Amino acid sequence: MEATLPTNKFGAKVSFEDTATAFAAKTDADLYKSELLFKAIHYNWLVKTGTGFVKFALNAGFPITGLLRSTLFKQFCGGETIDECARTAQVLHKYGVGAILDYSVEGEKNEAAFDQTEQETIATIHKAAQMRDSIPFSVFKTTGLGPMPLLEKVAAKLAQPSPLPWLLSEQAGWDRLRQRVDNICRTAYEQKVRIFIDAEETWIQDAIDALAYEMMEKYNREQAIVYNTYQLYTVAGLGKLRQARTLAVKNGFYLGAKLVRGAYMEKERQRAVEKGYPDPIQPNKKATDDDFNEALRFCIDNLQRIALCAGTHNEDSCYYLAVLMEKYNISPNNQNVYFAQLHGMSDHISYNLAKAGYQVAKYLPYGPIKSVMPYLFRRAEENTSVAGQSSRELVLVSRELARRHKRK
Image 1: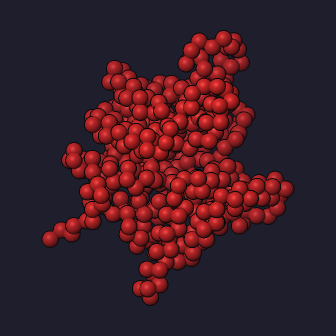
Image 2: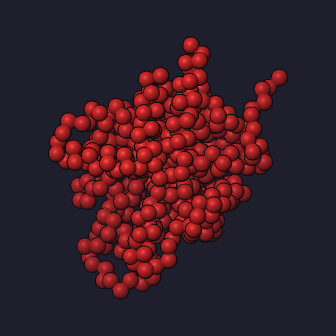
Image 3: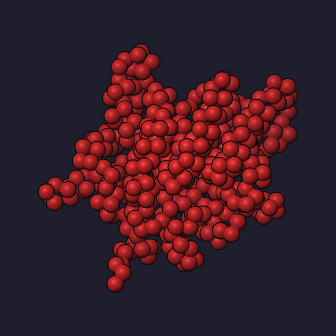
């Protein structure tokens, strides 16, 4: 007789309470380090103080990379190189969890650096093609391929005719940026590797969207290869998703849609106040949650045209998607429905979904330690600012350690 999986308040036949499954890949030593780390980042003042100290120490050349490698870096990153990430991906694959290769070097501002990011992203695609079973996606940020002020100007011109003159140098810069994006997406198409284009700040997002749909129209004719990202903590997010589906139907391509809540709330609200335009962020968490879940339903309703990746650490949204899939008789291993979480976070979601047969992938950021520190600082701040995030992680890690000790 087939075992009955536990159900939750949504009725989904999967549970996120199984810590033995969640931390099966972790040693006791790994869990003790995670416990200490989540205890530390539970305190906002400690995160701010620690972040300031690390920035100072790195700029001053103090030898702290070893400490960072064994703490923040190990928790949230897949390695310093593609090959190190590949080894991490192999470990994840043993438990049915895929990897998303993410070259997470940020803050570059010159053409040589943009070219380097392009080549590194293309290298992740080739690695994914070699390890197709364990690395189903690659990803890039458009600001890694071109200057943010240029994207801001393009977005302004797309929103309404900009009074600012379009300089020849800016046109050349835009052409180079488009070519880099095209080179990446063309490689992904040729290698049959799906590629995410990450969402960024709202004031440059229209430019990113335009690039994404241009690439989809070229490379998503047979299946979704290129995915755009929709931030549902923005008031406009759900409407943008619906418009994108209409565009896909009209122009004959498949829509790749990665849904996230969002990551720039404080910055967005501050800029809206400074510039005197309406706050683009949802008024409260409930509005965000409602739109995120409605976006899930919309994608499942239109699965014949949309390939979905639900990038979320929210348990209720994951449960809801599982219920939708069961309701519409969509197999858990359907390749057009993925769940995704960040490496080092929400393992109770990722590993339990994978054990239940769902398609799951972890973002695996990588790069030289000093270069990925902006990413790591954001992860620490996110765990502090998102209500209950670090507390939930800490409770689960501590529960698993207690379970293991009791067993001994």
